[in-house]
Length: 383
Ligand code: NDP
Ligand code: MG
Image 1: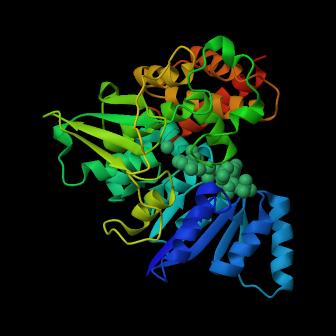
Image 2: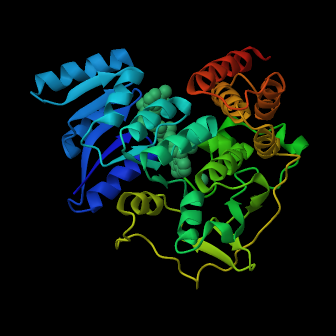
C-alpha cells in the first residue's frame, strides 16, 4: 500500500485524485489532505478517506473545522497556514505527495517534501515555473522522482519511456487553443469573464481556466517542460490541436515522432503518477476511432495571445524572470476574476512587470520569494 498526501484535495485535481484513490481498491492510502477554505468538502473527505492530518490554510476556517471534528470525537490533527501545508507535505509516512494547490504557494511545501526524500506527483506547474532550478536540483540531490501530472508533461513522460534523453530532437506540446481560438486582438476586446471561464474540452479550477484562455497556461507548460525534461527552449514547440486527443509529442533525432493519445480526462495522468512504474487497468473511456473524425493542427497566434510569447521571453531572460511572470500572472488573473481589469489587460500587466525587473541569474530560494513578493506588489498597482 502506498501512502499519499494531497495538497489541494478540494480542488479539481484533488477531487479527481481522490476518485483514483477510491478506484484503487486499497492500493493507495491517504495520510494528509489540505484546503484553502473549503471545509465542508474537506470534512466529507475526512470521513471517507480517514487522513491523520489535514491543513486548512485559512486560520478561521481551520478553527471552525477543528471544533466540528471535536464534537464528532474525530482524532484528525488540524493544522493551518503555510507551516501547516509544510507539515502535511513532510509527514514521514508519505511515500508520495501530490501537489495540487493552485499557484506558487505550492513551492515551499513541495521543496520541503523533496528534502525529506518524498517522491512528488506534480500538478502545480507554478512551483516549477517560479523555482525550476532549485526544485530540480533538490530532487536530484535527494534522489526524488518528480512525476508530472499535467497531461502534456505526462504525455511526454510516457513518450520518453525506453528512449534516451540525448536522442530527443524536440518536444511538441499540444494546446486546445481555449475558448477564444481564432479570435483576433480586436475581437478579444469584447470578451467577458463568463466566456473566458467556459473551456471547450476540460473542466478545471478557475485560475488555470483563465490561463488556458490567454494561452498563459501553455506558456507556463513550456517553462515547466524545460525543467522537467532538461531541455533548451528551442527544443520546445507548441501546436494548437483543438480536439485535445493528442496530449503532446516527442520528435527524436531520426525524426520519428511519438504521440500519446487519450480522452481528455485527468484521471489518467494522476493514475500514472500514483502507480508509476506500473500501469493499472481502469474503467475509464477509451478512444473510439470510429467517432473521432479528425485531428487538426494550427500554429499558435502569438499576436492575439501574447502570454505564450512572454513565457519564451522569460526563458530567454532566464534566472528570476519566470518567477516574475508567474507572480504577475497570478495577480492579473485574480484581478480579472474579480472583474477589476479586462481580459486583454492580463498580458499587458504581465509584460509591464517583466519590463521593470532586473534579473537575478542564479537565485536562492529567498531571492525567489522576495522577487515573487515584489512582482505581486507591482502587478497590483498597475492601472
Ligand atoms: P483548483 O482551484 O480547482 O484547486 C486548488 C486547490 O488548492 C483547492 O483545494 C484550493 O482550496 C487550494 N488552494 C487554493 N489556493 C490556496 C492557497 N493560497 N493556499 C492553500 N491552498 C490553496 O485548481 P486545479 O485543481 O484546477 O489546479 C491545481 C493545480 O494543478 C494548478 O497549479 C493547475 O495549474 C494544475 N493543473 C490543473 C489541471 C486541471 O485539470 N484542473 C490540469 C493540469 C494542471 P479551496 O477548495 O478552498 O479553494
Ligand atoms: Mg496541461
